[in-house]
Amino acid sequence: MASIDSMNALLVDELRDIYDAEKRLTKAIPKLARKATSDELRSALEEHLEETEQQVQRLEQAFEHLGERAKAKPCAGMKGIIEEGDEHVGEDYDDDDLRDAVIIGSAQRVEHYEIAAYGTAIAHARLLELDEVVGLLEESLEEEKAADRKLTEIAETVVNLEAASEDDEEQSGSRRFATSSVRATAQAQGRRRSSARKK
Ligand code: FE
Ligand code: ZN
Ligand code: FE
Image 1 (tube, protein in one colour):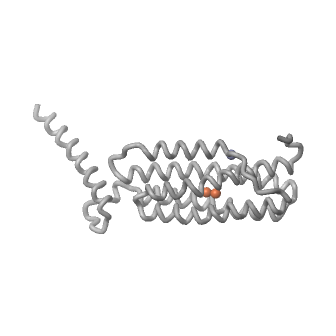
Image 2 (tube, rainbow, N blue to C red):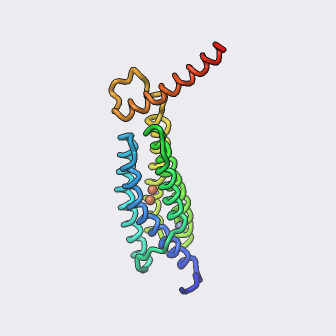
């Protein structure tokens, strides 16, 4: 393979890496969405999947501006983050909220990696005064940042064991199960404490 001999060639290389990462994500995000229990989390992931498909197209437009063929170069980083996410999400969890919390953690790792990659590529495109490319990449960067913010919001609100309280009658069956299993644990702990006192 030819050596990278200019900032232009470096930018093309970076975009090929991001292109590969985004294409992997179009397959990985639906898998995460399917495993999510919270409706809000699932729809956030589904919305971001649609954005990700657009990001793939934006990268193809950027290659066009650069007069380069849209070609993916394996992104070992994203491959690893996706593999790690699969591993964590596939563990056994006593309730669905805990798995949702792990899905959010995996998705946020993805977003942060993308934010870093786009940030660097934008800086390089700016050095080369490639305004159209900068514009395309910035659009995607903003979507990544918004997706990350949304995930933080869901982590702090929807996935909350305290919020899944007894008086919340509108909860889904799985959420009720989560709550009752948490309550059962608390009751068992209470029993252990009171029997310890009797001795
Ligand atoms: Fe993306
Ligand atoms: Zn990469
Ligand atoms: Fe993303």
